[in-house]
Amino acid sequence: MKHLKVIFLFLILANCNSSKESKEVMISEGKTFQMFAEIVDQYAENTLQNGNVNSFALAIYKDGEMYHNYYGEIDKVANNKPNDSSLYEIASITKTFTGSLVAKAVLEEKINLDDDIRKYLEGDYSNLEFKGHPITIKHLLTHSMGLKNKLTKGFEAIRNKVTNGTYDYKSDVYTIDHLLKELKAVEVDKQPGTIYAYNSIGPELLAYILEKVNKKPFAQQIEMFFKELGMNDTYLQASQNFIERLVKGYKGDVLAPIDHDPVYGAAGGAISSLPDLAKYMQYLIENKNEPWVKETSRVLFVDKEDDEQIGYLWQNIDTAEEEGFYYSKTGTSNRIQSGILICPDSNYGIILMVNNTSDEAIRDWEQLFFRDIEPMVITYPKLNLSSIFRLDFNDNPSKAFQNFRNLKSDTVTYDFALNDLNNFGYDLLNEKQYKQSIEVFKFLTEEFPENANTYDSLGEAYFVIEDYKKALESFNKALELNPDMKTSKDYIKKIEKITLQKS
Image (tube, rainbow, N blue to C red; front, side):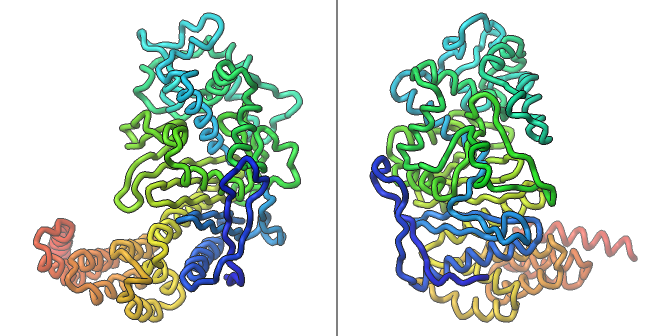
């Protein structure tokens, strides 16, 4: 890991309209922030060593401070690290811009969420209803239109060409006129507003409706929105204009084709730099009480099947014990996996992008985002001792144990959750690092001898390696501390059954 000699803080000017770029100001190399940044960097560098990912771009906002960095190379062994001028295909994160414009139109009473969308369509669209229940603006925003097929044939054909790299920008044209014509033949086979089915048609129709009510081209509206937020390096449907700056991406080891979103690009056609996305994140957090920001993050639909709440094309809206209220959006193009998390109650946000969309790369991206980085952001300005322990353990288990013992009493500087440490043991167990997993669980039983769950976990690790004698000892100790520990009881029954079968 390269240690940072200078730590930077992005300060976004309060008046975004008058600012053409963000100021980059050197801040004090305070021990806590420097250690926080170095831990983040080390986790990113360690993830790169898995070999599944080319490069990461990361931005973290917390309590007025912004940290951003780049890791790896766009092309492996090419010495072309991403930088502030790199442009990323942010795919479905574009939908949140479209949703924001709709939220503004709703507040201005130009649109009503319960409007039948046929109010804004010219011609006969009698098919756009199910048993008298029409498709409304809200259904477009929440992917609950009730369509039998997620895409029309023409739209799907274009998307297939984009995915397989055969799309021709000159000859393969699909406009709003094509979509409106095909819309007359779609089938609505479910009551709108009842079933969640992620699709791109809704945002494109919303762009068309916004043109109707605002009497301006959608591209002009979105450009004005970017300028309001100071996002002067974000563009819609402009990949071909920025080929040299556009970050190449891979599907495993294979170079993936440039992405393209049909019609307006309202569902996924934006490209942006990391600093610009950081401005967007910071604006949403610092202006959380601004009417349109509150409206766009409001829950409009609950997907009961996946237990997910949807807003104005934002997803995963909820409230957590530590984070408070939060909402997020991910984007997956041919080349880039991206994600933005907004936690206004806890005053933090995270953006993470990776230029590889293989299953292994997306798994590494997800673990780096939510398992490694977010816990540290939640506890900052206290340093997350669980995260430090994980890094120390991977380098030297004895060092990890000693450091934890030395630091855990410093509750002013450090914070940790026993559950996070226990989960680390399970991560090792799931990775079949049995010896290391048992080392972690044994250490936790020694450090927290009154905690039944640590003994239960140790017993499970012994059970996996078929050391049933030690597993029983651990499970019995867990029950001694907590007679209601169900998992220990269940495992004891399993061991008894196995013992009888062998006898």
